[in-house]
Image (cartoon, rainbow, N blue to C red; front, side, top):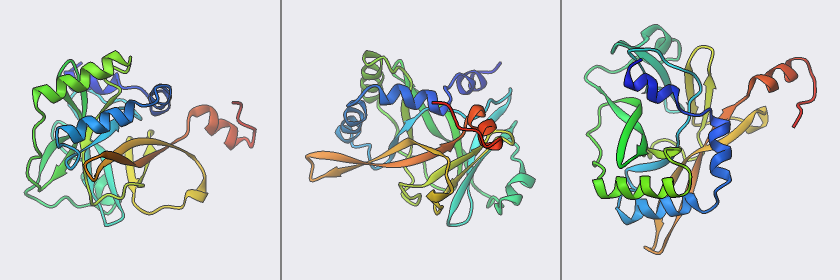
Length: 227
C-alpha cells in the first residue's frame, strides 16, 4: 500500500467525521481566526477531511472543472485520467494544465495532500511551519487530530455548492445549482472564511449529500428509517 492510498483510505466517512466536529463547538471559529491571523483566508478554506470510497495503489482523486455549473472529481490511475468518464460528464481537459494538491490533512506540523485538482493557475501561497504547528497542536488538544484540514479556496465555486457522491462509480459531482427539495441528507464539509472589518470572521458553507446503506434500503422498500 503506497502512502497516498493509506492516507486516503484511512479518512473517515463523511457522516462520522461530521458528528465528531459537531460535538466540539467553537473549534471552527478558532480555526477561522487562525487563518485570518496568518492571512491565509483568501487562499484556503477549512475542510472536513472525509472520503466516500477507497482508492488502490497508484490512484488519486482529481477534480476537473466542467461547465459553469459544476466540477467533477474522478479517480486517476498512474497519472492517467479516465477520459471517457470525463467526456460523459461533458468535460474535456484543456491541454497544458497540471495536477496540484488541493485538499490537505494538517497533522504533526505537516500538510499532507489527499486530493488534487487539474488547473492552469499558479501555485497558491505555501503554509508556514508556524501556522501548520499551531493548527495541528490546536486540533490535537481538542481531540480532533487531522479531522479538519484545508482546501484551496475557489471563489468561482458558490459557497453553497452541493457535492453529490456516487460511491459505486467513484465519482463526486460538485453542483453549483441544484434543487434542495429533491431530498437527501446534506452535511457541511467546507467553510469559507471572510474577514469583517478586521474584527472577526464569518463562514460560508459547502454541503455534501450522502445516503448510507441503511437509508438506501429503507427508502427502496418504502420503509421508515430508524433513528
